[in-house]
Length: 263
Ligand code: SAM
Image 1 (tube, rainbow, N blue to C red):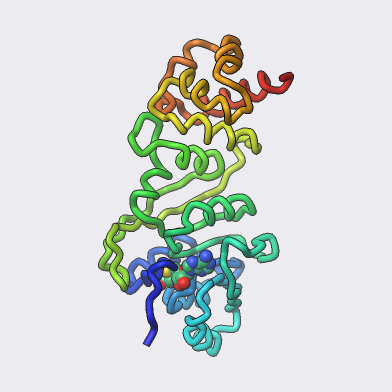
Image 2: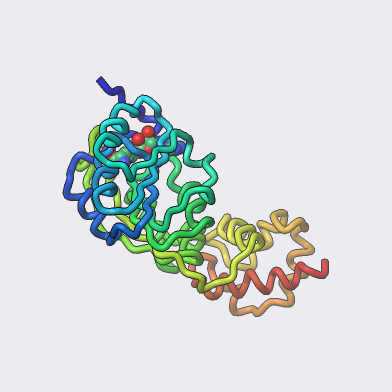
């Protein structure tokens, strides 16, 4: 009998309606090469194998290999990589779409790792609260660093809310099926991510006091930051961080970058 490992986020999909929903939203054809993170017992994998040209699955738990072997007897387009998805070099896998019921403990790092290598479309399962933070709008309570870090790279859409009863073992929380479509609307670099971390450490403060409080993140003391901000427009400095929209954050990051350059 299979022993479920909570620490690996092993809540397997048992309600087939959501499996079908996920693959349909991915609009798969035999031209697609799909990446799945987490095989489980292969319920989603099987549908992917039926519809896509090639399927790559990264699974950390080797004790699931009997389920992989069974699928491999039927589908010759299935490739399993027995490794930690966070350690795999995704550049070496030739995929264009991602469909996965993600292990929730790695939701954030795996999402940004995927966004870094790029793909055409992803349909991913997250915890409901995490998904709400991804799609939030400025001014809302769920709006934060995660929202902006995702939205500058991709457009996130919640497709459906999924009850705990859709899984076995039953998780304590609701889940969400999310579609991610990457875009190149913004030019972002390492400085932008540093800036985002710094400013959202104090999301309820004004931009001015948030940047002063986070001055260490920019390698300066509070006094130097206060002086530096004299060159920035008052109206943006007086806004609360959580009220800034993405364009304003990008603009502010670029201003800060140019002000910091000569220092
Ligand atoms: N796709 C299956 C399903 O929908 O029933 C399983 C989903 S389950 C939520 C997550 C799966 O990811 C588990 O099989 C777990 O062993 C695997 N997993 C957990 N952490 C992982 C990691 N770091 N790298 C690869 N797989 C991981």
